[in-house]
Image (tube, rainbow, N blue to C red):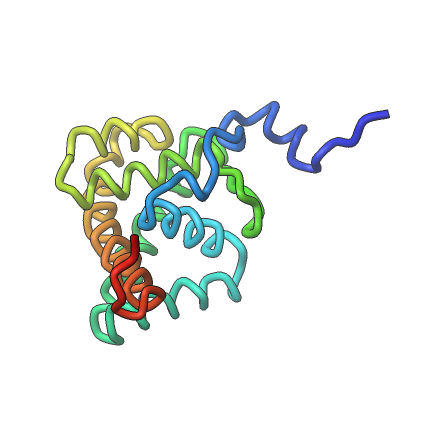
Length: 162
C-alpha cells in the first residue's frame, strides 16, 4: 500500500501543480511572491495577511495602491487563465509550476525585463490580456521586491549578515 498526497491526482491532470522548486531555493522576493500568491487564494484570512505585509513595508498610502495592483494582476490571471491555476498549501515547501511562473514573472517585470516577463505570462494567460497583466505585474513586482527587502532588513535588525 502506498500513501498519496491529496494533490497528486490534481497535479497529474493539471501541470501547474507539479513541484518544480522549493521555497528555500528562491530569492526573498520570489519566495514572498509565492507565499502571497498562496495567501491570496487561501481566503479572507490570507488576503488580510497580504494586506498586512504590504501595509507594514510600504505604509498605508502606498500599500493601498500596491494592493490594487496585486488585485488587478491576480484578477487577470484568474479570469483569463488558459486553464485553472494551481497553488500548493501555504505551509508546503514545494513550489508548483504556476507559482514559479508567477514568481519569475514578478521578478522579471520588477527588473524591467518586459519581454521576458511577457513570455512567462503567456504560459498561463491568453495573449489578448498579456499587456494588461504585464503592466500590473510590473507595479506589483516592484512592491513585492520592496516588501522583501524591508522584511529582510527587519529580520537582520540592521546588522550585516554573512
